[in-house]
Length: 211
Image (cartoon, rainbow, N blue to C red; front, side):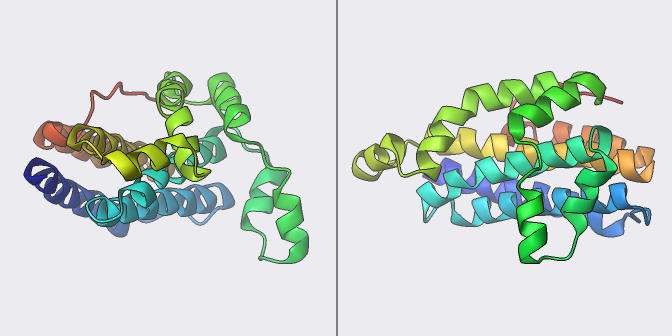
């Protein structure tokens, strides 16, 4: 697993650059930007945990790719397609009532449809393809299905874990697009391009989308 260990180390270096961009950016004080930023940070946190767990607890690491993806999708939806009432449900103080109200928020398929209608050009198609490729396998890990049961017995191929890591890294740097949208900082997109060039060995082919 030496190649995977190297890929994890490289991914942690990539993660540090993305984290620094978020830490150094000023998010405007409005509900949309607030909700989007919180969701992006949640997505980054899931990706961070995935990298920590990948070498030691692969099934838990793999399962985290789904909430990382979903938080990113919800961030893009919140920026481009959410109604004021949706944002209110997301940002309300946590109570039993707000918990029930949040159940009325759309699921991934509905959010992707809304992003297709009013989001950045190409975003829904890119995210939809990722969902199509990953969903069945990730569902199996979330729900204790055949994938983790089989891999727990036969082992985890290094290529499988490396590909998973690359997908997680891609979701991590895609948050930079969302950051540029809520802050207006064009340097963020330049950083994304530089990261993609420097860390192409731990990233899949990315198809850019733009507002």
